[in-house]
Length: 265
Ligand code: SAH
Image (cartoon, rainbow, N blue to C red):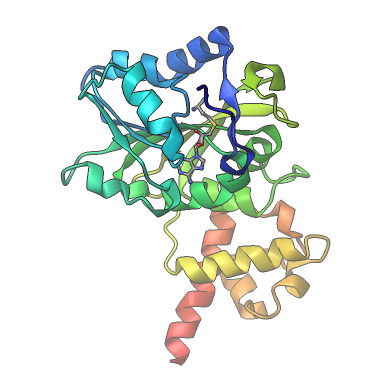
């Protein structure tokens, strides 16, 4: 019996061999690199990754895909299959201290943002991520200040990673064809961070507040957090709007607010 793609698991299987070849070329896996693939599905990208790296961990949620994967790869012990939810998976359990992973995935689009944050929170053990996502999500992730899709996702991701859109992929490359276009994204966690954030929870809330009212000036949208003194100290113009502030300025502003919270405690 062949497996029917399941909507609830966000299953759109890649079948276009030229797209698969482009993905493998972009990743350019080398022997002995530690790779982990999220959601291997029917193994479209898996075979090339396994051949290039010599071994591979894969994390697949759908139980019904596990046995077919085992059979497809002839029970090859170098393919380590984890029948788990990637959202709950601690990547550190795959490696020894000091080792780093390369993360690859044609992600289920319905959970792509929470998965992305789950990986960013484990960035200290990741060399890079190559992810297939909905085109609009990739556009938002890589957008520069001033762009109309520059927003929360751009700031949160670019604070921690170098982000680049490698190429776009039409819906026809997948079975079934999704309703959206896709794009292939590369993220490289920055280490050390160029603009360290002292309190990431506060930074997250400040960025959300700024873009929650993106038409307003920062003076108004951030009045709950940021005083005129903070704007003055960081030399950030309070008349700017959220979309005009770069990643570095968000870090500086959040750090200034955080410093004065500490002083007042
Ligand atoms: N990489 C394959 C499949 C992509 S479809 C290809 O390119 O053809 C997305 C895959 O992610 C499916 O196999 C789906 O079962 C799996 N998946 C969905 N949610 C998941 C989760 N939370 N954790 C791990 N895998 C998941």
